[in-house]
Length: 341
Image: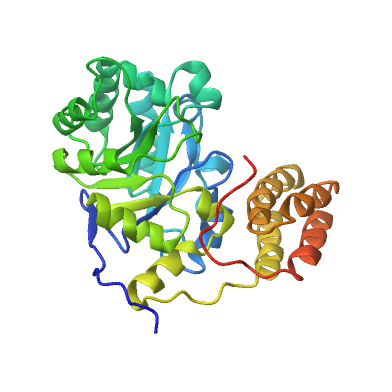
């Protein structure tokens, strides 16, 4: 008989917001949009659904009520909006606008992104070298927010820039929780996550700590919490490959067993239909390609499936090609590890 897990489910509150589970979806640019969040929500198990990373400049200077990046699904609750930027007034104005929409329960400031636009502007993880600016940003955000404020960060680097010092700072600045991706900005994904850093940070930070990094199975999620004492787990790449991982995690935690996986071909077809209903064709095609890139990595011949499907220019043709491939496949056992990046 499979050995059942011994730990009891944790209760996680972020500020005044109770989460149904301590398992959070990572914010990922161009990936964790409303359609994907609703896809995950159909199985359940996710305790907090994150938006894509939102550029504070754009949100502050536009109407987020009509911004597709700020759109919500029908089942993706509770929700967190993550913003990135480096201007205290702009970040606060963006958060205030989003709070007025009434769509989001938690707000997150990005101190973790180390690539793309944030890296070019020295936002995200680069701000860890500018603690005074981070203090200004969070202080201004606190003035306008009635909702909980979270920081997602990487391991800081440099003299006098230790985890211990950042734990003290973030506590003083009234942050309600911290998500720690247990790698530095220079690490990117090139080295294993340093779970010992999560354990050290949890010992000294008085508010909830959510661990992030190298969680590729339900078993690994529970092991991270047991080994580090973290209050929750954030899952990123594994959730892109298996959007049902949160439901698997809850089931495994309760029973010590994993349920049978869903029909990946069928869910891919439904997802394409949802994208077609939400977005114009060009945007739907782009988002389906990103989804296909990750779902195909469950399979040995996934790279071939992905590249073949993407030769098509229409959403319908891509979805039909991918459905044909996946209908002949079986989802392999955990752990799931991406081999394309």
